[in-house]
Length: 171
Image (cartoon, rainbow, N blue to C red; front, side, top):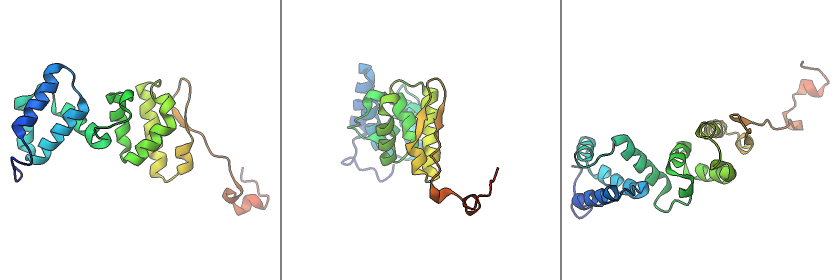
């Protein structure tokens, strides 16, 4: 164990707490994530996986998803109404500031679009954000029946090349 200190973490208590969530059938993934993150941080990887396998009926992938929900959004997640599946997809954006920007911008669409459209919208948002194109990030829209697409910004004077200003037609 990683410098295991019984005062810092009560493994038995956390195991019982998680089993309590599991037995009630109300798997609060944020509370599970909190408990699992604490245990995972205190145990070596091999010990953590063994403890998980011996004590619970959910997969390590499910455990990682719970940890991701908790570490990304915290216990007081204000977007729980979107559902954990959508929140897990949105977590791909990474930084909570970017997530907040994304959710604020698309809050009205997030509950009505299909998962495939959500994934496309997230990918477009990430691409535009990684390229440092704030205008593109602000202009991602959702088509009625299609994928998310980028609406191009109008060309402004500063984007016109010298040859175009001189009247040379590039086309």
